[in-house]
Length: 126
Image (cartoon, rainbow, N blue to C red):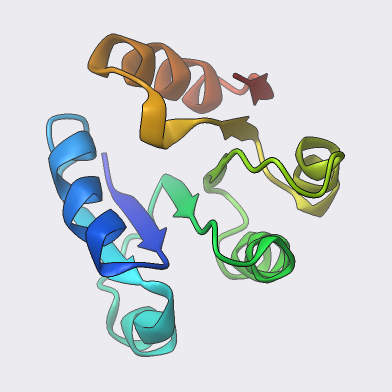
């Protein structure tokens, strides 16, 4: 199963490969600042899931949900939970996300449950 993970910090970029490597093959991790280049060079087929681990700017994260929904209409989109704004989960779902979860603080078993729910078509809030 093919996955695309987008992060906003170098530390998160390193962590994403470790956290999701066992779940996806191939797995592509990209920093947000390099996303435009990665989208041009991404080899078909399209990813089945896109994980957004963008926490520095909630507005930018929400905009990326809408953008990626248009680029990969068949992919499931999972977004890192954020404290601000208070209605972030609702907004992410309105933009097209299939799940909002605290990816950074979830153990391996929790990641398995989360991915199964989102890939199964359930809208997930964890």
